[in-house]
Image 1 (cartoon, one colour):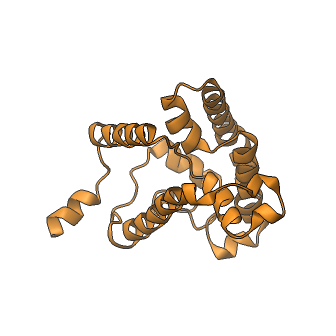
Image 2 (image 1 turned 90 degrees about the vertical axis):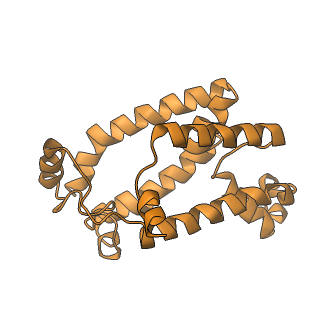
Length: 191
């Protein structure tokens, strides 16, 4: 058992994870389903009676329950990984990255996956924390709705189905990520 936990706590190599994602996409394709996590919010609102308020939520949500089960599994898997499968060693970061993060106010880069200076209850009540967590969360939700899906839906499912709108969305995600990383994040971290 200890050996299995040790194996599971290591990142899976591309030649294992890639074919598993491919197999999942093939199974979804044959089942006539599309993958995407942002649809679970729509399904949840439909279950709660959102169809009475907006036509957007007026659909047969029972056909989407499988997606809720997937998200529940992701939450449970995240809990298991963070509770029992954490690496005891710090995250190996390049020295240049450590120096730049320290210059931006991250005191111990690599000690945790989520820096305390950004992802904690104390930081939520600062301007930086509010911008990163609340405003950033709003932008992610707005962007997923505006783009017609989230990164997982477009990048995994949409590209697998050769959909041009998904390719455009993924290109936009990468451009947005680069702008955030190199232009906006340094400004936000100095707030």
